[in-house]
Image (tube, rainbow, N blue to C red; front, side, top):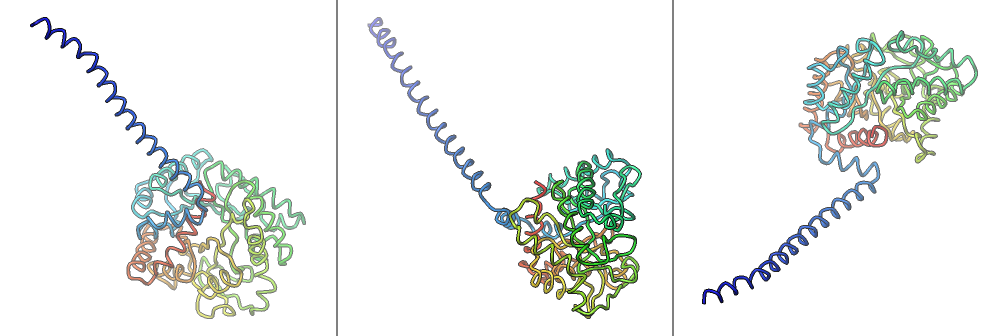
Length: 398
């Protein structure tokens, strides 16, 4: 009897082993199926993301952003010092600022600037979107860190060569050098006619247009965003917007036949070559100058008639509009910082520039956020600007 029970136990071992193997196989098959299904879903999501246009990607990103994050993207600020400090870190993490502009106070050597820009970019990327890292490197009198990064000649000197390719070469060389230091946006070239300090290529529209076109092409070929400035043309100004209000008294016909020509021509060229590489790789900067023939009440940077009516609707410019520095006397002597940014965005600007003072930067941010929360800046108006900014970052910074 004992022997028979032992035999039966022995005969059950192969059966149990087979059952174990069978069940394990089923479990593995199920896990693999689920794994394959998850991988398939991830692959499909990745494919869908890749198939989205830049406009669709930007819209999807903006849809997930908070009001505070959106407002931060409207702001480009200056920082203090040559390293990432507590104020800068706070502005990046809590105010979600969309861009940083550097000045001589931030720049000691090319290696130090690269380290600073890398540090700024890393802190911003941790929050989800890359920064615009900008500089004013026109050449001549308007240049940064001249000893460690020799600037190109002034635009007027380049213009006197009579060779637009000179503008191309200087722009491309400068852009390559800036990109090597971690910059991705240059506030150049100047499209004004006959501006002071040699900042314009020429006094006439036809020559200026040729040289500006070459300079934009040089930036594009180097892979650096450029900026056409100062819309709608600052050359006729007889004083300095850094100090106080400047008024250009030319009538509309005169502006149309001269100052507006480089902007109109470049925008038309941009729109005609929409899908060409680098064709839309530039912004427009609005000046704080008054133009009574275009708007009797507001400076250009705060003028719906000039930014929305003329630049957007008449000239069909659909890229990013950035203001000149809101701390300039032409604005700061007449508007509080809590209102200046609001007026600029309501007028049609996308990116407001506040270059120097931490208190001014926070005042502009808080004023914008308050206007969004109250509905003064509508969701549609806010989202339109943030989509343009995010789209530019998708197309040119990623």
